[in-house]
Image 1 (tube, rainbow, N blue to C red):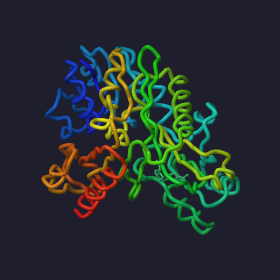
Image 2 (image 1 turned 90 degrees about the vertical axis):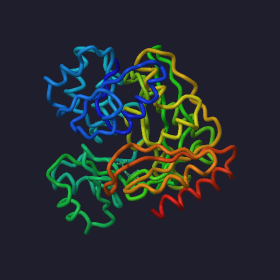
Image 3 (image 1 turned 45 degrees about the horizontal axis):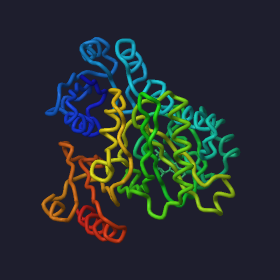
Length: 371
Ligand code: AMP
């Protein structure tokens, strides 16, 4: 029996990938309404309820997480009873943006220039040090663009402090990137590492809207560089499972200023939204590979079967009949009630060549965005 901390759509897709391998799952989530509620056993309790955690761990062979804001103390408490993969130190490194950027820097992985901000004075000092434009972010619990303010000029400093001050912050240089990419990698218990083709990601209102895999027009050196960075992170953390790193690709002019073509923005010690295309688009999906890795099975090939794109269904659901009528188009719904900004499902479009993919994607996007 595999225990999963978090019962959202990522957990749901992990279980759906593990059932064909004869595996069973138990979830721990504070909400009785979690997307896994009809899919597997679930312990409903707050993450810091160690009595409930004890009950949850009973009979498990291994545990993992699908939500990166699970308290590190919870993951460590579980680790005293059963193996927990990825190791809780990965969770710790990813939960605080300042620690995360320092961790990347310690591995010689380029990031945007950054400075810690703990009070009004250090914000002033950081603005002088980093320069403007810059992005002020909360160090913890920020996701989908929440907890961030862009500072264009000095007049933005005060309002930004009013919006976010009073908690640990980080100031990052605003990067005029060409595009956003992500690399997903898996490391098995034998230490073997495999990376998926890099994905191009487009966000809308701070939330991932669309991913294209493999990223169009990607240079082989960029893929290799991203793989090198992923390998460094995986090995430094003695990582088991799937890891995602979000990257900024920079054009040559801006690269001269930052000194790098590829900057690491953040990492997720779990399966990732930008890897959903792998269910139909890759030889082995990110979900199956994560499950295989944590139970000690050999991981599967990470190559793309062809060309794929994924579009998130956010806020409200379209009538899926029309989507299902399109060739090689696959709909995944997460059994969540509609709410503004909420990811309710996704659509994956597969194709044999880039033109076919672009044509099909255009139809799906027009339809999805019109809802
Ligand atoms: P994050 O929560 O760090 O992933 O940020 C959410 C989105 O904000 C990213 O996907 C980027 O589109 C944008 N963003 C974050 N940091 C920066 C930055 N330093 N420069 C430019 N854009 C950024």
